[in-house]
Image (cartoon, rainbow, N blue to C red; front, side, top):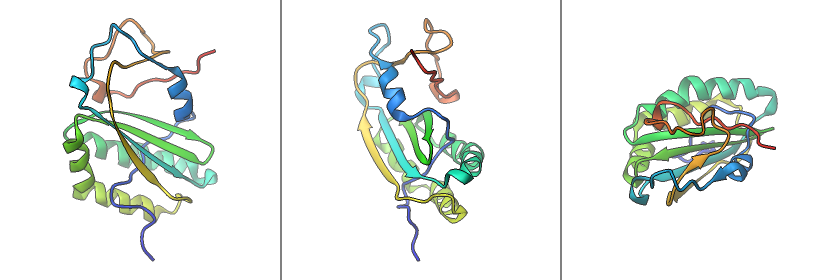
Length: 162
C-alpha cells in the first residue's frame, strides 16, 4: 500500500490555535518593512490526526519536523495549529527555490516516510503555497513595539484576542 502523503508534505508541532484564528488576528502594519520584495513563500500543510494520539503527533513535530525545517537554507519561520484532529503547519521560505529544495531533500523525504509510518495521520494531506506581499505583523505579541530580527530563530506567538 502506498503512502498517503506526497513526498512534499510534512507537519510541524501543533498547538491549540487554528489557522482561521491566526488569520482573523493578522493585521497590516505600515511600520513593518516589506517582506524581501515580495518573494517570500508561505507554505501551508494541512492534515487530520487521530485526536487520541495528538501528544504523539506534537512530540514528533517538535522533535523531528521542526529541527528538519530549521536545517534547510531559506527557512524563515513557522506557525503550528491544531483544532481537534485538524492540523495545519505554516512555514515561511525565502523564495520558491528554498521551498523546492526542502521538498527535494532526502532528510525531508525521510521525515515524511516516518510520520506516515507512525500511524497517527488519519486523513488526506494537502500543501498550498502563496507568495507573501505587503507588510506583516501579528497582533498579540509579547512586545508589539518590536519585531524580531531573526524570525527563523523563534516561532510567532499567537494569543486569542477579544
